[in-house]
Each structure stands twice: as structure tokens, then as C-alpha cells.
Length: 494
Image (cartoon, rainbow, N blue to C red):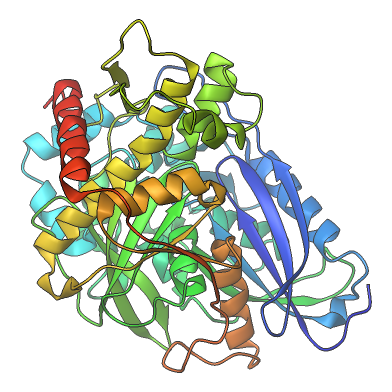
């Protein structure tokens, strides 16, 4: 590869795969490497990853993506990651004590229910913007301390370190020299006060977490140390949770701008500016990013199953061989069939937050088949997105007219994006670079390296590929969404 000028290397460690993308100084992708990540399901509702697999796949894709580059060609590495997933490791050896407990894992549902019944959710929400749900890190970490032999005693002695995936990768990439995370990942642990910008002692007591476990919290663009594992010294200059990185990659810099990422799950973030907006409709209040010590906030809606429903069509039912076939199959579905798939495989996220809900299919007739199931799986993504946007409008009237910027693997499906625009009654913009999570990580590293402007200046890295305009009659869209809401109500357990 003939490399001219400085390059930026983004590591995007996701739930089902690990990806690295090499960008040039204009944030155009130059090389990509990807490896799938094994999933482990030791019990119903439990989801785990092997931390050594996470690190090995990360190192491999970084090396593959920068093949042909010298370390001196790389101005910086940006890391973005699956959020809320918990790793607990030994400080001396760097080895994890247990498999990582993944954000989708529901093993602490009873613990969350008990805390909620005891009246603690108001405190948690006021400090973190989150709800008491097993989705977040705190109860997962508490479970590890209470269920791994000797872990709590080791933690009290300061022998262990906790981190989300970004933090674990940073520790390993720097040879244990840096135990740090960024503010966006900290904000997803349920241990971090998003107004004060620090770990919170009241929350640490509530979840019985020793402070000695916790990493230092830094800005998203900052000096995170350097790695020597890629052939030479390369600075790590940016870090953000995947949805926050995608918001930056989508250049949603102004309050009122909105993006939705469609990967394993779906996550919509609405920039609300420099003041947090606390939801009355069970959305999450979170940090969009923190730069120069200044916090920008967002409202977030989280859907646990989006692309995972397509994986289920492929791996669980065997009705498609590749994910891209789902849209082609759905387009052939009988329009007279009204089949709804509520993909509550691991519970339902916002705005329902029902950990015990499970998946269900409604509206089956003898004429329903493979195509109708494929269409129902894809349409469920749009229905859930509309639920989120309706809640956002109710929480923040300043949202105004919606143009939804989308990214992630599912956006390659024109069928899904067109139905999304139809259901929302609003334009859906797909950018030229759909891997905006990695783009945002590279952007952070480029900012810290002095190669790129900050978000207070005009965005130069976002370009439109296609705008999907609504085509469906509004009464038809409203009727379809009403059928969806009825199906969801039938699956709720509380």
C-alpha cells in the first residue's frame, strides 16, 4: 500500500465480531479487517464472551488492517466497543477471572427487581440517567464478585481491575500500563454520576463495589498511552462506546440531531446539548461525548434485538443462508399477511424495559411462510424505532422535525430502510460510510492528533449516500404500528 500522510486506525470491538478500519487523514476508509466473535450461552438468558478471544481478535484485525503501513504512518488509534459488557481481571497477570458478561445477559434480573422494589431506582436514575436493568454493568460486576471464588476478597485487597471492553483492551494493548476508560463508557456502568462527571460513592455502596476496582475516567479524545504490539510505538488517542462513536461518526453535532445504529441491537441517540434531559418515558439519559472536560448529553433508546433477529432467521430457523437474503425474501412476502415478530429473545428494551418478556409471533395463517417471517423480522426493527422516536418527542419537544441518520450492517437493506422511512413518516439518510462507529473512533483519534477539527466546527467527514423518503400512506403506517403495539402488549409480563 502506498501511504501518503498520516493514517488513523479504528478498532471496533462489537458483540458478534471485531473489526479494524484504516482511514486516511480525510477519514476515507483504506483497509478493513474483521473476525467473528464466539458467543457463549451457559444458561437461558445468559450471554458471555471469552476475554482472550476479544483481545486476540482485536490484535489480529489491527495487524491485518495496517498491513503495508509502518507504525510511524499511524497518527493514532481510536477504540470503540460494545458497551456495558463486564470484564474482571487480575492486575498482576492481566488474566480475566471469568468470561465477560455481555450487555445482553439477563442473569441479574432478580437483583434489579429487588433493588427496584426497595425504592432505589429514583436514586440510580437521578445520578446516572439509567434504569435498574440487568443491561447495565453494575449488577453484572456485583454478580462476579459474589460468585467467583475469592473475587471479593481479592478486590478489597486491590488485586483486581474492572473494566468495560474498551478498558480491558487498553490495559492489554498498553501492557498493563494504563487502567482508564472514557466518560461515555463510564456512563453506562450505573456507577457514574453523569452530572458531576465522577464515580459515585452512593452507587458504589448500593451495589457493594470496591472503588479500588475502577479505572480512571478520561475525555473521549485524550492521551490513552501507547501500544508496542503492532510493530512499533503507536499512540492510542480516542475512546468511546460504540453508540457514542457512531453519533460522532454521523456528525450529529447540533442539539436535535438524531442517529440510529442497526447492528446486533438498535440504538437511537438524540443530541440534547449541554444539559441532560431526564426522560418521563423510560428512555435513557446519557453522555453523547466528553471533550475538553465539557459534557454533551443525549437521550437514548436501546433495542436489544435488531440484526440478531436476522441471525435467528439464518442460524435458528435456517430459512436464509446469508443475512443479505432477508431483504430479498421479505420483498416477496404476501402483502395481505399481517405477521408481527416481537423479538424479545432477551427481554424488551426501551421504552418497555421488561426483562422477562420473550419473543412471540402473531398473525400467522396457513399462507404465512418464510417470506412473511423474514418481513416480520425486518419490520420489527422499524416498529421498535418508531416507539423510541415517539418517546423522544414526548420527552423533548425541541426535537422538531425528524431526519434520521442511520448506520450499521442492517442499513444495507433497502427494503428495511424504506419501510423505516414509511413508518416514521420522515426521511432516513444513509451515509456513504455506513461503519460510522469505526469512523467516530477514528475521528476522535484524529482530533487528539491535531489532524481534524472539533465538533464545534463544520463537519467534513459525513456524506450522504441515499435518502429514503416516505411513500406509504400515513393511515396505513399508523394501522401497521397499532398492530405492532397490540402484539407487544401481549408479550409484556409487567
